[in-house]
Image 1: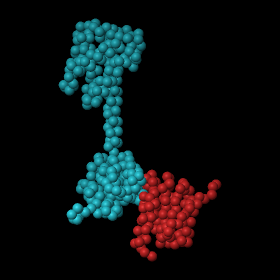
Image 2: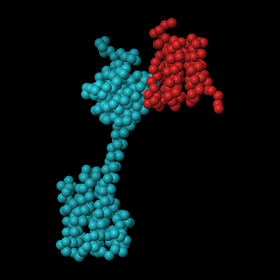
Image 3: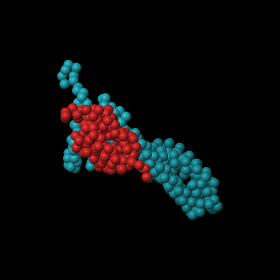
Image 4: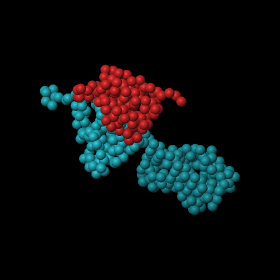
Length: 284
Length: 125
């Protein structure tokens, strides 16, 4: 395969001559697997633009899709793939947009409506394969971007440390705990203890769906570290099935105070700091 | 070779205060342990406060120091409170698997002194 400019094929002429039937058939083929999730008019607009860009590249004589004449085609394809990736189309559904042109072209050559033979078909095939791969890359990149964004959003969700009372802090944990996240939580909580001078901390795990040995280990470490700094740490909101898991795994919480609910834990913390909650009429 | 860094030990009422402001070498730790033992014995203090709010880095040797000092003080019927431990230090000690045993901890000097006062009341001498 030569990507040079001196290639002796008439692909540009072929594409130019057959542009009307090619573009129509292309849209038709590309629309089929999308099953109406994208309007034909929209698809036709996208593909028309792309067709013009590819034709411009082919007309330059270059067959290297990384070359300058294909810059516009690459940019258009990149955008298209990104849009598909974000809209939740599969990689095949995305790539078929490019490969459908190949089929349309082959059909056209087969019917011999326009001039064109093996050299044109090979050139077109190689060119469109290259563009197809480019589509895959753009698609994968877009998906990675989505994943990165989500990971960032998850970190932003990372547990705030809230002040429940003078000298009482709480960390409501939600979702799945992994080492990295627990580390962040631990550091944040300990920092907050220093800043606020709070002597009590409550780790509420009502929102934690599963606890394994590692997570339990992290929780214990956090409590121990808080204790080393001179603060008392209570764990609250253990769900029934998590309690069973903890016992089943044989995890020892030792002398760490655990409470059923955040309210109980708060009451415990208040009592420990010498505050009692009494209703206005004197009832407890 | 530099000389041994002596940590000053201050007496406030019947409490001894050792404020560690430098990065401790192992021999400094040993010197502190000796000095503290002598001072408790001489003054009959009922409490020891170790202020480590300026300590950034600890190793297992220093981690054990707290327990050793507490055990020594205990022999003189004095309680030990470690105050002002930084988060990073606390995490390190936990990761090292060191618990301080009988040592009490407090967030700051004020709370540490309050704990000692409370302990003193519980066991009047």
